[in-house]
Length: 248
Image (cartoon, rainbow, N blue to C red; front, side, top):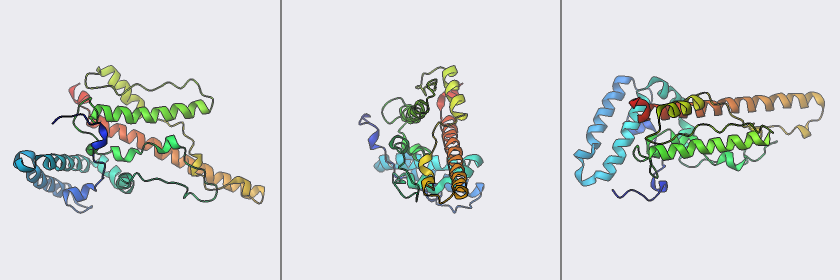
């Protein structure tokens, strides 16, 4: 009860979805469904009147784990990014470990770790208030958009159009659709230069310099692709859980 208190009370410790359901990582669909039923019965808040708060938290965690692992696309993506998702709870920072030509990661790019938002434990309830689904994801996508706008401006692209806002429970469908259309086709303005491994100034000759340049380009191309995929995947994750989409 009571509400309020801001979003900071949401527990961001990220647990492995397979661990939550107590199944092996190669478990088949039937096994996952059975494990979910068992955990859901055990942790249902109605069955835990003396321990309602913890039961609600675990029940939500169990439901989230089942939602992800029972969807083939979401499970595949989770399996491929599991380590990054689990690390996100530690506010994993890449700080300065990127070798020779390493530049610092710009602070605004490091500020929001998107992996931790692939879980229903990052929001409380489907409301608009602090810590609620619509507030949490509004803030996340706005932060991404602000960084994108700053990158575009820094490159002299001043026609950057700020994307449609996520809105709230009562936002009309055309605006909701515009939001999802934009983010599901997202293309980043970031250049990921800080991930380049080679400092071109240290090249002994032009041939090596060209090879270094190629390597650097390959790294940044891959980083851009990965980031585009990450943002689009988060958009899909949110859309699947957005009641405005279901209501339509």
